[in-house]
Length: 341
Image (cartoon, rainbow, N blue to C red; front, top):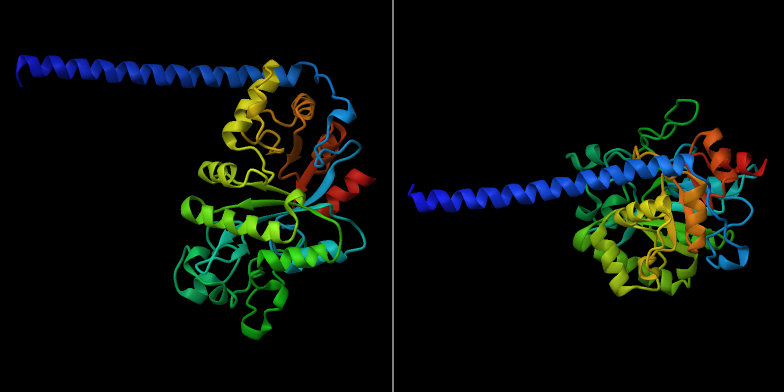
């Protein structure tokens, strides 16, 4: 290597090292801000509560938290199945205010209810199709209709009541569920709101968003749904194409909001493109999101605060008392009892 080449290589290495140091410095600064922010949120005042008339967001409650069946009540019935919805709606011992469930798009562009990226955990798909990691986007709705969606549901008493049901043994309410069928059933049996998450990303996520919007618009349900996704590309797609669809915050928006709440920073109003924070309490480690300060700061900006997945009695009680708007729980019967009794 010539002397000139070595010199140029050293320059490139120095530039690369400077960029790396700059990136690391930024990351460290952000981490320090987050860690210090956690201390602020834990030990500072709860912040000023807004007047009720300032909060026009219909998903903000002023007396007690809404009870939401997470995955339609995953611990009391097979998740994301019609059986679970029927159990929550028809049970006389508790009420559900809002239903949370997840969507995937099939090969023939149908929206079905499913949480995971594959069908393996909740159904007998591996046995039926002879392969692992079966994605709904690779199968048609008709192909999926042979599966038992209660296959691996474990009841509170430790039993597997629907395991090994095949063919005609599988009840209709344990088969794959279309979004339209769920909405038709719920709308004919009560006045509910919905938290709906699109799990697909990329082109499948865009197609899922198109179909979700079409169905909600057709059924006049846009104002009763808060849409969410962990996929930033889908969030951007919805903002650009369906600005009238109410949505929850993205991960990036949650972090920015958290820091603003911790340091009492008034963000530009254009930042608040979301109607709700759908967040855990402190599952992110240093991000202490389950605080009265976060809730009050959100309410001052007309943002609802909806927590997932809260299954412990003490935590349900605490969040309800500090002003949470909605508590998503796998045990909505417990959440109902705690909040209302």
